[in-house]
Image 1 (cartoon, chains in turn brown, cyan):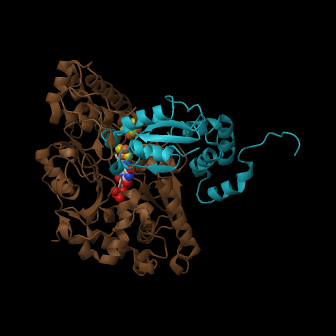
Image 2 (cartoon, helix red, strand yellow):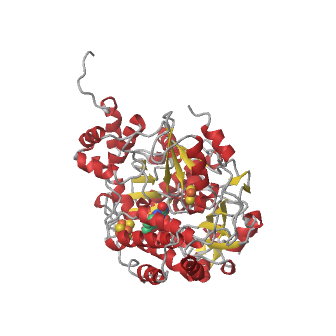
Length: 460
Length: 161
Ligand SMILES: Cc1cc2nc3c(=O)[nH]c(=O)nc-3n(C[C@H](O)[C@H](O)[C@H](O)COP(=O)(O)O)c2cc1C
Ligand code: SF4
Ligand code: FES
């Protein structure tokens, strides 16, 4: 088993992050040789290779990619590939560097996937806020048409037609949910649809459709380049291959770190990111995007794999890891996330629309000093205990956003019940001065729970 | 041309629009791309523009409105010349997003939900913009800026005229 410390990045090799690798430099100038190698194989052989690699989706749910592809009904045409580049789960910022810096890694992956699933047409659904990503991808696609790599005879293979369209969203988290992504791409409000039917059977324009995350698809050229055995040498239980971890919040060196999933959350925070900044103490960590359960400092000595995070009591999700130091009030943090879900609920299902809104109102009320003791029960009634199918939202809505809105509430209460009760008892937030303003890497004003603070942040 | 036959804002762009429509199996899929085209050209999307978009994608103006009102990036009112989308979600919030917001609003005289008197800036708080490891972060028009400090903000915004 290869060690995290011996790992050399292949998705994002050390380079100037403002630089884009264009076609002439891609693969050392060797062009799309891995897509060529894939096209020389039968589609079923490519699917078997992906199955063998153990690759699981990087969008959050971790579904085995090869298996997803094999659900397509045999022979049905046309069929589509949609790349989920909506990356909107708070804490997640790993697909953007791939698209901005290495667009051809994604595009070559798309051509390999198109071949594997026997499709001619891919759409990249990229969130509207990623102006640069969309511009870079469009230019890279134009390069491919100009070079004859895309088009009627893709890669010069007579009759093998392949097209890629870059499609921009316009600001809606819900469009990252796969069925909402499809309705949005069809030109409507991004409303999720009930499954089944699954998109593999009836997806875009009612045709069989595969939806995969950017990082998932960018893995494909790497599988051909380095080989499946290399890929599988990085393994923790059933989590194979390297992963892009996004670390944000109160660490000294936040960033996107490409590492095998054997790395523990503790090593990520302390060894790679330099630990908590300003000599502060770690308070809690949200390890896999905003919807996953919160972890306390004594729960972080687990590998950042799907299994490792499950053992820790959370989920790897999108591998977007937010780190909070002791100046962060957990009730205030929860109110922030609940505001997000309230805002992003598409409003189709009553439990999610009303539930997300009520959760926010109650948490906000507790934070602002208006909470009453029965609020704790009310929250538990609505949100459940942070596990699936508990409470009045989870399991009762069309898509998983409902669950995502409920889970953090249950988990925050489990971890910090005393602090919620303290807010209610004190009729206010004990973290008097929540100022986080940074200047030149230093807090202008530091907040300490319970302590009176000196002046307001000096920023006027 | 002497007098004002009512002129559509998309009249000069019909060829571009047809090229977009040709990329999709269904014309309706051109909805978001055409709305983006309008917003990039006009700065916002007016009722009149929605009518035109309805015509080119083949639906009613009400259906276009339904779409415009769903997506937060589509502006239904004119904004400042530089519209700031400042992230307020957790990773940014704990790294000074609200302090950055106060700083920007006061230094550039941006009223809540409005435009600065000189017409240069407007600002809204947005949800996570995928720059969490460079928090706090904001979009100024199409350009992303991270690791905001007072000095960085001055550097970014002061010279925009
Ligand atoms: C509310 C919600 C938001 C989601 N947002 C994203 C996203 O931004 N990017 C993404 O790749 N997957 C997102 N997903 C997961 C997708 O529905 C889907 O599982 C994924 O794109 C499949 O790709 P993968 O198998 O390669 O991971 C989201 C799911 C839900 C329920
Ligand atoms: S669960 Fe929420 S976001 Fe999902 S479809 Fe229902 S209302 Fe919309
Ligand atoms: S939380 Fe601000 S960019 Fe993600």
